[in-house]
Amino acid sequence: MLASVPKSLAAWLRHYAPSTSHKLHYRQECHWKLQLYGWCRNFTAKGSFILSESDDQKLDPDSRRRDSPSTQLTLWPPGTQATAKRDQRFFELANDKLSAGEIMECEARGPLAVKKTFLALAGAGCVSEFEVQWGGAGGDKDGDRFLKFTARKTSSWEEFKKNRVQDLASLFVKQSTNVLQLARAIVSEFEKPQTKSLRVHAYLDDEDALNTLAKSIATASTVHGFRRFSCTTNLVKAMQDRKRVFVYITCVSDSQPPASTGVVFTAMPPGANPSGEHLAKFIASVHDRLRRGDVVDMRCRGAHAVAHSMRALCQFQVHVAQFEVEYVQESASSVKTAEGTVVHSNSDVSSLRVRACRGMTWKDFNDTDFAVNELLFATATSPVKGLCSAVASAVQKQGAVTIQAYSDNKLAMHVAVRALAIITQVWKDARISVVPSFGRTKAQKSPVIRFYVKQQNV
Image 1: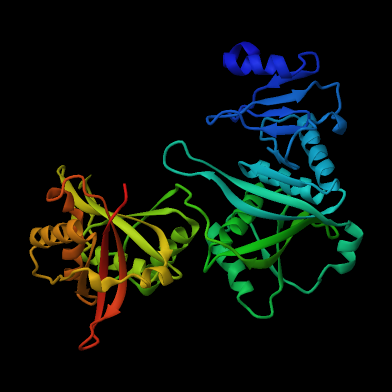
Image 2: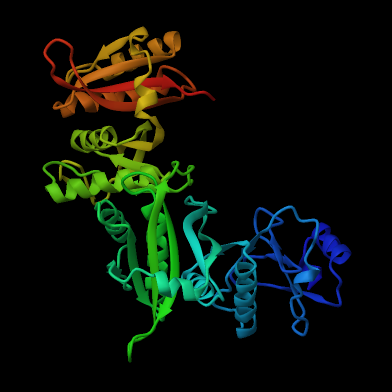
């Protein structure tokens, strides 16, 4: 089996791992991992290796490496192709680590891995407190997103049963439950003054529901702000009912915004005269993704779509939303434009591609001295190329510029965004970021939208 391993790593394995007591396993999920004396380590960016003890040798805690500076063990719950022996070994490792009072981290990929993580936490010899977060890097290519459970021992099961709160608000999760809707429901419960803890539960044999439950807890930390949730779990079987996994959630504190995930979320801006529900759903989706650290990609065809997109970004709370914009060519075959016109053609049509991400806090942004930069005005009849040239000239001279338009004039907003999209035509290799915000004119206090354009540091 070592013949298929890269030579440098194979040499390392032969040197440090006794061949008589270890053997190499390959996971069909295409994830290699290395587990040496009960410890797991990653060795390559593309994958990792599992080096497990031979089947006839039990894990000896005293044989673990003494020189390791960390007491945190990372486990990868077995997937769909795992044998019962490997499952049992995972449960034993989790129980040993938690019972010893050490921190256990699980990286769960897929519904079955999530279910086995819940089983390990609920079946351990002690009660463990855990948090669930999104881990890994997302993206359209080479994305590797997973759920990261971080757990530690808190008490015995006897103490847990004695002190457990019985009268709790409860949410039931089933296979058809939507992750984002459940995350919002969890946050909504904790926004009530009387809510200290919340119980969320699903059937043990419903792997998809358990996966949704875990994803929702991880997602809830970035819904309507940034929070940390602490959880405990146990298995419950009442009368003839199926076994259920109960998760008790407590909001322990506010948290810092998560780092960028690398995930690109595509949002479709509404066109003319959208329903209030449709528009609210679009805005909420954009805000949720920005809080999570995702990049929001919006393809805008027409002034209505641009206006809805810009207003959604302006309404983002706590942090600003900054964006880049460019023209892209897309096939027009049976395309419905933002104005509702259906185009049947083999030719391409241009659309504005807005890519937005979470930026600095509004407090830091408002500390900017805008008075030192030039203020440009955009109207429905402003020449796009002329405005673009003025923006490029001002940014090159001063580093930043502000474009202002009336916020109830969608055509003026459209002109401003179009001018920003073609800036590379007058300024080669230009790289700018734009922060939209609402404001009012000094004289008549008329509502306006401002685009603060700044050169990006390359």
